[in-house]
Image 1 (cartoon, rainbow, N blue to C red):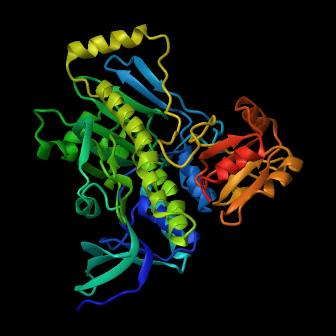
Image 2 (image 1 turned 180 degrees about the vertical axis):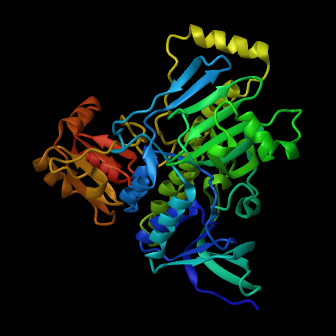
Image 3 (image 1 turned 120 degrees about the vertical axis):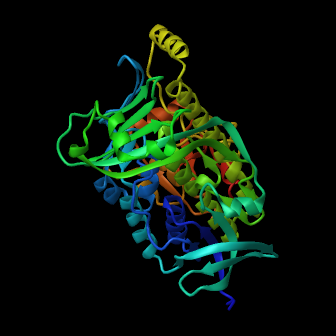
Length: 493
């Protein structure tokens, strides 16, 4: 039996962390949202284990920062790339201090615990409908909406749903992407790795930091996750028998220099193919892609989940603006142009690091090690989050950059002062009041005074007296007079 359903503003296909984050953000904005997922419940085993400070800031915008901090740990010890002789080649430093996003720069976590929090947030929005055990089988775009045909595995019936827009958060084998005919560009890395997760039963002397074992005989990764969780990733070699490789006895043998079977319980052992892919076309009409449906990165930077959560933060407020009528449909074209540039950069760095780790020729490994010894600095940093071409002022300094999160003199963080709105940040209350008279009623924008040395110095460096921020905390532009403010506001009004 086919049943006709009401018209939703947005349908999200896939209820993993990216789909749940997008559903929560759209739910907060009051949009009518449908979430479809073929699974009956959260996948109970470990998957992603790392996110960064920008992502924690997005969780903060959902009101989840405190709860997420309780189930995660700051990555204060960093990541070391070590050769077969135990020599450190390269380091991504950790830090115990808060970074520019008002929190630690990196966090480690257990994905099912995070998904519980995200779904609890979604469940608090009556305007969000979640349909589990409901598998998407067909997509037809019609005038003004999209018709989604699904198979309800609870009732074993076909159903139809209608939505103004559809976002495919449905993973690497995305049906939404296939419907859009968006080809995947390969950025140069495709390699199978065995992922092996354990729960420690006793104290084991293991490093507190992540180690990339750049050993040509058997490249491996070790991760201190959270609590008693530890992970090893083991590169599959050409002569490996994969059926034998995944057997616990063989895995423990490979790890015997670090850990013994009686010291930990094996939770999961599975072979993954690490890919470096990015879709060409994240939007086609009323269909869009986010997360692994749009891009897949090797895990050597821990940025796969981060990229998808950033997608959600970039997209939700644009969908709200278009659906509410305050912006034209063309605004959605800036989604791919803004996000794709940063994703390319992050995947490119992950591929480069993969080339270091996955070197299996002894002579090439020796040459690699020699070059690193000659380097004056062996520390690397994540690329600064910078938007590609889109909705921001490229003529002014800092346009398209992620703004840091200062606190006002009362100790309240910027994002808590602003909420999920546009903001104009200034240090001078009198001038702020004067500029406030220019703010259009058609744009949900809030003036904020943060008269601190940190903000004052940032504005002085940019030769500006104020900065206008988008709801995702990226800089729309800076200015120092009424004409420049009006020019910025014309971009969004």
